[in-house]
Length: 272
Image (cartoon, rainbow, N blue to C red; front, side, top):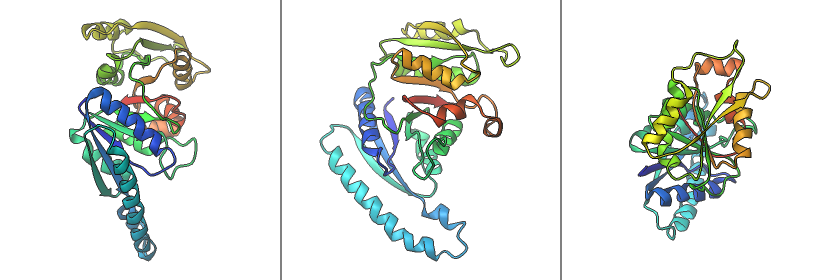
C-alpha cells in the first residue's frame, strides 16, 4: 500500500477526510496523490447554450486555486510525500484515470452535489470499475486508526474474496479481525462459491488470526446487520465486496452495496 489516491473535494468534511488520508499515508509510508476535479467539461456537454457554464469556469478555477493553496500549506508540516493533480470532467472518471498506478482510492461517502442519504455515485462507480480497492470515508470522518478492529463481510463469493485479499494490508494492523457471515433464509440465500472457513484459512497464511461470526439478518437488511455488528465490536473498518448482482438490478430492487453506501458510519473498504 505505497500509493494512495485521494479525492480532494472542497466541502465541509474535506479537512477531516484529509487527516484520515494522511493517517493512512503515514502508517503505510505511502505517497499521497490529491486529485481535484472541476466539472465544467462534463456540464458543458449538456448545455445547449454554453454561456452559463462558460461564465462559471473562472469561478471554479478560482475556488480550485484557493483549495490548493490552503491544502498545500497544511501539507507542508505533515511529513508525507504528496503531489497535487487537477482534472476537468466527472469526478469518478478523473479518479478512474488516475487510479491505474495507485494501490488505494479514498473518497467521501457523499458526493458534493448529492442529497443526504443518497449513495455516492463516485464510490459505487470506482468500486465497480477501478482495479484498486476503494476506501469510502464517512462524512464526519476525522481520523483513521489502523489498529482498530476490522469486520469483513464474507459469503464465499468472488466479490468477497477479492475484497478480503485487498484488505490484507489493513487487517495485518488491526487488533482484531472478524470474518462475518450473514444468515439469510433459504429462499434468498445463494450458493456460496467458498465455505466460510476458506476465508479464515487464507488469512492465517498471511499471519492474520480472525474470529468467525455468524449474524442473524436484521429484517432482511444485510447492510444494517453488518453495520450493527461492526458498531458492537467497535470496528474501525468494514470490508465488503461490491455489487454481487448487476448494478442495474441493485438500483431497481436495492441491494447490500447500495444500502451500505446510503449510510456509511465507519470507513468502508470495497472492491468488485
